[in-house]
Length: 200
Figure 1 (tube, rainbow, N blue to C red):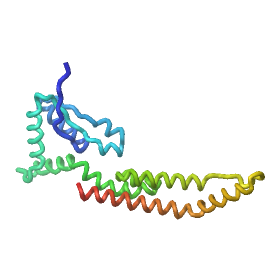
Figure 2 (tube, rainbow, N blue to C red):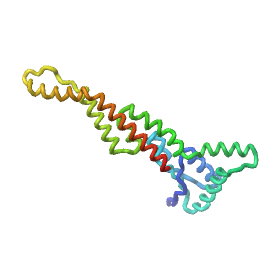
Figure 3 (tube, rainbow, N blue to C red):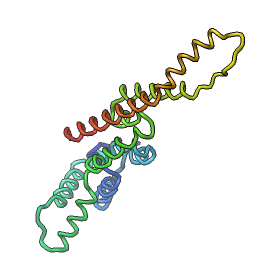
Figure 4 (tube, rainbow, N blue to C red):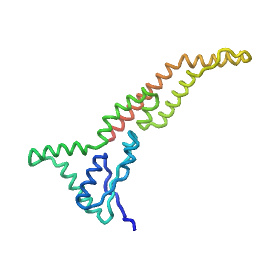
């Protein structure tokens, strides 16, 4: 018969999850993590997946009390000795909220992605509709630029002239269009990340 499990905490990082599970297991509580491996497999996108800590239902209160004591000991403002102070600083750095570290990285990533290809920055920052529009527009304009059409089609001179005139216009404006899309994506991504930082 399977054991009933309950969620008691959502860890901010794999390091925090490992630390909490270790604390619980040292007290004789069998703890499990959910989302740990998915987060590591998805790379950058995995940062948005919570790592949930689960324990047997009958040990829920004991586990919550242990975690509360653990966090209180980490957040303690004063230490009785220099050694304790150093340990406190080390633990604080280890359990630093993942969201804080992500914000520091987010501005760099949001700034760099548009230079790989317009649209990626907005998609990363959560502006999915605008990011998709910019990405598709940039892909289409790039495709039209590199599309090769034979310059001599004897039986379709009139059609050839019309098509070439259209593609020549597109090709001539492509650098401006591409730079405009890149700039739009850059501004959109940075503003979105800044907005998320203010809300956090």
